[in-house]
Each structure stands twice: as C-alpha cells, then as structure tokens.
Length: 507
Image (tube, rainbow, N blue to C red; front, side, top):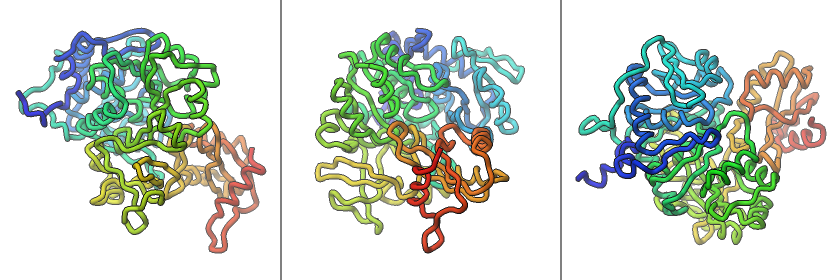
C-alpha cells in the first residue's frame, strides 16, 4: 500500500475509476450524453493516445467553449503529465496569440467554431487539432497524421507524474494589463477540493451543474471535485451567452444538487421566475460581490446561496459563507476554508486588528507556487504568502469582508478588466487624443466599463474599433466626449470627476 502522502496521484480519473467505475462521472446537459467513470477513463486513454505524438515537453492548449471535450482533455493532460492550458474564447486574437506563445504550446485543440482562430493564434511548430462538435470528444488530427493509436494507460511506478508538477495553466487579468499565467498543480487542485468538501459537505448523490466558462478555474474546479469525491458533473453548453431558462431547466431535469454561478447569472435566474428544488443544497456564488438585494431575494425564495471569495491563484475558493451566515452578517464572504491561512496586512506588512482594512494575503496548499513569469511571482509573494492586491477586513470571528482593490482593477460580470489596457487600445485610434477609463457601478455587472474620450471620433467608429481589439467584457458600455480630461492639481487624471462626467453625459 502506498503511503497516504502519495495519494492521489496526478491521474485522478484513474484513481476514481479503479474504485467506483460504475458511478456516473459526466453528463452533457443538452444532449444527455453521459459517461461512467469506467467509460470516461477509457475515452481519456484513447484521446491521450492521439495527443501523445504531438506533445514534447510543452503544454496542451484548448480553445473551446464549455463542452464535454474540456473534461476529456483535462484528464488526458493529467494522464500524460503535461500542463493543460484552457484559453478564453472571448479574448481578442492578438491576446490569444500572445498567450499561446508565452505558454509554449505543443498542441492546440479547437472545435469547429474556433478552428479559424486556433490556426491564426497557434505558435510556430504547434499542432492544431480539433474535437468533433457532435460527440464532443472525437479526435480529429488536422496535421494529416492518424489519430488512431493504442489507448494510453494510467502511468505506474516511476512514470507517475508527481502531484506537485505543473498541471494547469490559466490566464487571469492582472493590474498591469498583461494577463498573468497562474500555474497550478494537481496537489493545489486536490487541496482546494478537499477544503471545499469540509465547508460545503459532500453527498453521494451530488450532481454539480457547471454553466460557467471552463477556461476559468471556477468552471474547471467542479470537474476535479466530482472526480475526487466520486460524484457527477453536469456540463451546460457554453459559448452563446448565459441562458437563464436553459439553466433552470438543466437544474430541474438533471436533478442537480449544486451549481456554480456569478451574481449576474443568479439575478437573471430569479428574474426569469426560477425557484430552487428541495434537492438543491449549494449555489456557490463567486466572481463578483453579491449585493444585499440579491441575497435578500435568495432568502425570499429559499435559494441556498453561499457567497464566496476565490481566485485562480488559490484554485478556486478562499473563503465561503453559509447561507445563514450571509443573512446574519450582510456583505461577508465567510471564513477561510480549513487549509487556508488568510492575513490582513497594513501598509507596513503588519497584521491588522479586527475591523481594520488592509491587503489580503493568502497562503496554504491550494495556493499556486508562482506565475508563468518570474517577475509576477517575485512581485506577488512574500514569506507571508500571496499578496492578492484585494483590500478588506475580518471581524473577531474571522469573517471576511472584501471592500476593493489596491489598484483600479474592474470586475465586470465576473471578468477582470484592466482599465489601463482598455485606455491604451482606445488611444491607438487615429482620431483619439486622450482617454480615461473607469468603472461605473452597475447592479447587473458590478462594474460597467466606461470611457471619457478626447478627440474627433464618432461613437460608432470607436465601438467598431473596440470590438476588433478588445474582449467583449472589456469594451466600454458607456462613452462620453470632452474637450479635455479633468485633472487634479498635480496633473493626474481626476477619476472621480471623470465618473461624474460619464454619469451626466455618457451614452
């Protein structure tokens, strides 16, 4: 018997299939296609065989909305011991190309809908392959070689990838405007899933619906959790925007007990008249602050909302509040998970007293060891842990309130937006002289991206420019024009005055 410290190995699916092969692992919500752990284990072995010849020390990329193939490819990468890199299909082509190059991809897998973009962004020497959109898993080798090969078995002995090797690379927006590559290990993912189980509990019959994009940790984490627990993940087809009616139907028809949502999604579900079934026990609510009004609506309809503060760097949850705690202590995102060390530090790096605001610093086995770029790692880590850049405070019982950021990072619909990057792109328009980008409070999206522009540029032309060069969540939704930007006595842009101008005259 292996020592407990060696379990689980990097091949979580093989471990699970050896214990409960008959249990349902994965369901495609729209087609009802499903896989037991035995079937998923076999399918991943066949997929890994097609991938293996194209991987030579680099990473496996994926450009796809939420599909069953995401789960197959994630576990195939684990089995082959190569890092998996899900790319955001909403990003602009130039940003995708930069990320694919930085990630040093050996292969980039796409779907029919993303094939053209995949060929455009793949670095030199990177194989582009696709998965069939109908079944979601059939391997199509676009290099002209044969995709058929003997299935790849789970590695044994010295061939088992260590659980502390890089297994997942996800890009997340940083305060500098250049997305950071967060490097996570299977050990990070398992630590997160274990801590989540202590907070949320696990039921043998749990079925976790995933309507979130699987190019974010929030969409991938349920796949790891379910495989570790031996429960079921239900994947809702993504790529066409959030459909509250479809989500309500999937929760009902697939008898889901858990679901991951951002506040905007939950608001739209409630607006559509949705009420939860008795079996639903967890609505994990993260990605943006949940307003008191939203939590009041949840209480009125018995929605089991668990407000959460999480981040890619911690493989998902950091703190989570129970529904009861959220009602009794408005605004809190709960106490740290069992394996998390959370510190609130002042400007001198000293711990803050309860109730005093400071920077959130996180440590624990689920926290990444670093970023893709060393300079980001050096800037973010100290002997206290990861300096998140988020600002908040804890009460005497360790409940956390997050109040903002050290910088001006915006969060629009659960997506990070760097206003400096947006402003830089808008300033490249030949008819724009100056521009200031800020966030306006929005009850639906959290931050609404807004731009005050100096120059002789038509609104429609600026919007066309933005559509071609910015991700959808980065595009300014409110724009106003001025003869000059308001500035403080020191010459810096007066952001409060910018917001007032946008509120008064923005379209």
